Image 1 (spheres, rainbow, N blue to C red):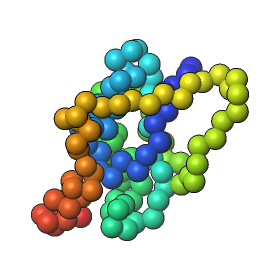
Image 2 (cartoon, rainbow, N blue to C red):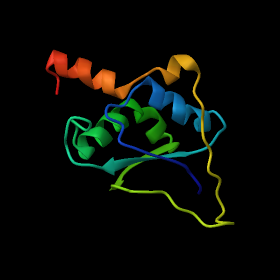
Image 3 (cartoon, rainbow, N blue to C red):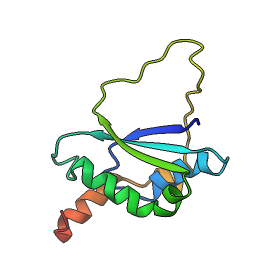
Length: 116
């Protein structure tokens, strides 16, 4: 069983992230969401376990249908591949409405409300 893999911090999960994975789900592909295990700081206010739990809550129906799997992975410094490895590297370019979504701005708003 093959998956389209997405690696990120997902701090926090938002509409732009959902748009991104929908690009593959809409093609009937399964999706593996990898949460990087990063330390908590201003850019990463949520613990990776909390991030995973939040994504699983948001995508509960897709997880139950076995269309999405969420895993925590060690933090990475690069993604590397050789030739003929049996998978594609695909970049998804969002429409401007989605491309303008900023997790940094979302985090700032959450901090203002005191929800972190």
